[in-house]
Amino acid sequence: MTGAVAELEKCLARLPGFGRRSAQRAALALVREKERLLRPLSAALAAADSQVRCCSRCGGFTEAGADPCALCTDETRDGRSICVVEEPADIVSLEASGAFRGRYHSLGGKLSPARRTGPERLRFAELRDRVVREGVEEVLLAVSTDMDGDATAGYAVELLRGTGAKVTRLAFGLPADSGVAYSDPLTLRRAIRGRMEA
Image 1: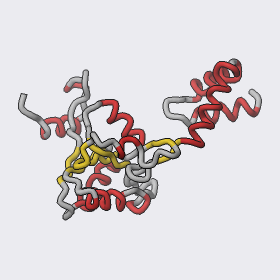
Image 2: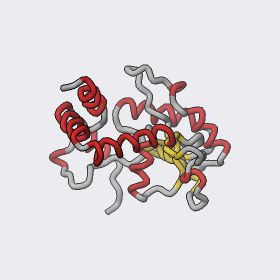
Image 3: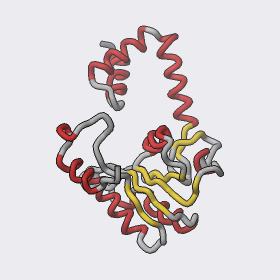
Image 4: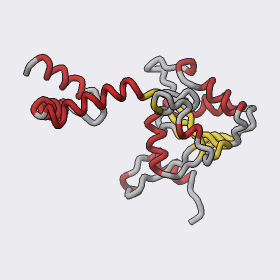
């Protein structure tokens, strides 16, 4: 394998969903079909590099020259509620569900002592400022349910105490198309605690 192809393979292997073998197959397909695959991908990557930014208000993805982003400037959205997520990609997933019509706030990660990510490295101060300045009534925490996500949620609750905003968290429960026998004890405990009337 030549140096350039090996480097391409190494870069592709860093992407989510790519293992060593799938990165190798993708790299070989790209160099084999330069006109159809490699050049359009190269142009799309260059455009994303030069044009995609993070919104100064919510931290989500936006295009250069569109700051604040379309979600932040959409007058039909409910400005009384903010959904807090870890990463900009989480906003994309929540929007695809169509279930939330408020505004968003990406923290840019989650608290993690192991990775030395403390509150000063995340967008917590901006969150509190927005809640107070914009008169937000509800903050929905849509963060991970692992230990770091729980710590992030706990920190946000303390930070927002005294702002007048109600702080809620996504419901926990069984995934769709799953059964009790396949669920871990923590998920089952949370599902029982969060049960609702049928």
